[in-house]
Image (cartoon, rainbow, N blue to C red; front, side, top):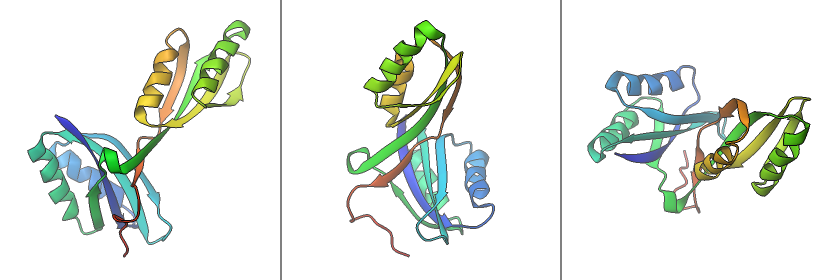
Length: 165
């Protein structure tokens, strides 16, 4: 099993995300992460999908997705020639004695404390998945009350792979 990150450029129409995720569901393919947002051109949406499978399944996914009417472009974002980022919001239960420890770990990871309550902190962290996993692992001695992750968003490096429509 290997993992691939696909970047799709699709028409910005209602139901497009549902049609794409429905294709995965009907075929029994797994979506590990999916993010979507409008591009600089409001006619189009960029969708980043992380999925896994053997080579045959991953090739089939790419072919099936490219056949959808709304899909204008699909490409694999290779790790060496792309930039991936994810956002995580983490609510940590803290008391007065624990608060400084969480803040110190957040500072090391260049995370932001975006909310402070008498019994908790919310930390905002942006980075690749390994950075976010490492931060979460360092919070092992603390109680994580809630965790929200956006999933991967990514772009290819340079201008060679830019799609102009």
